Image 1 (cartoon, rainbow, N blue to C red):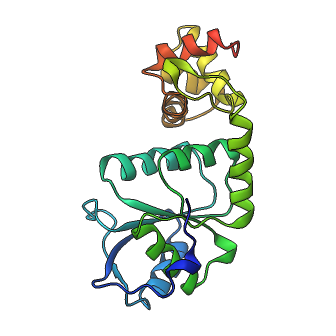
Image 2 (tube, helix red, strand yellow; image 1 turned 180 degrees about the vertical axis):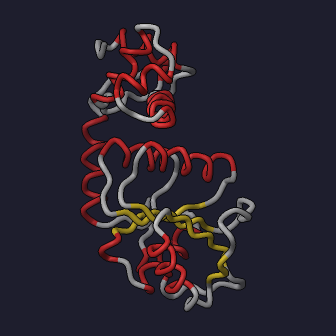
Image 3 (cartoon, rainbow, N blue to C red; image 1 turned 90 degrees about the horizontal axis):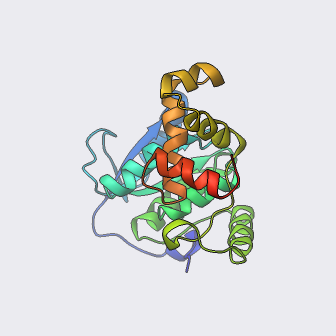
Length: 221
């Protein structure tokens, strides 16, 4: 059950929460840092030396494969609780984010110092804070999934593969390596690797060969 930001306004903390701010845009990072410096409950730490404690606050325009890989590292490897600040997010990425246990998300257009403070306190306690429209989309996604059968290895079925994911797996099935696929589709090699990683993670697959087999079996390629 999600507990929203309004539920933590009266909560006090015994010591500041270490918070690391991650943002590709220096101006966005500076703005968030400026807000958080005014919060007595927060202790800002360097984003490279967080050590898996406290909260990581990620600021991005959109949520893509690169952002998902970074988020997965923070959550799974460093076991850090995360607040996402985004302009927009698509349903497939939203499902991936929630599957990693991240349920504290803010729209950039709604960010204020108080909203950031509430979100950090909420994430630190392992609760959830989603914008109402995003919560509605999530509920809709989960409702549609209930009618699906199980996926590979008994895992819940997902919403399906995106067109570019299918394109990549089709070329993997043709025997192309990462570099050749990147040239063919006009992507970087890193993007191709991230696409494959996203597919294997979302569908609970072991490797790219398993991903190709799954795509063939389900009729994607």
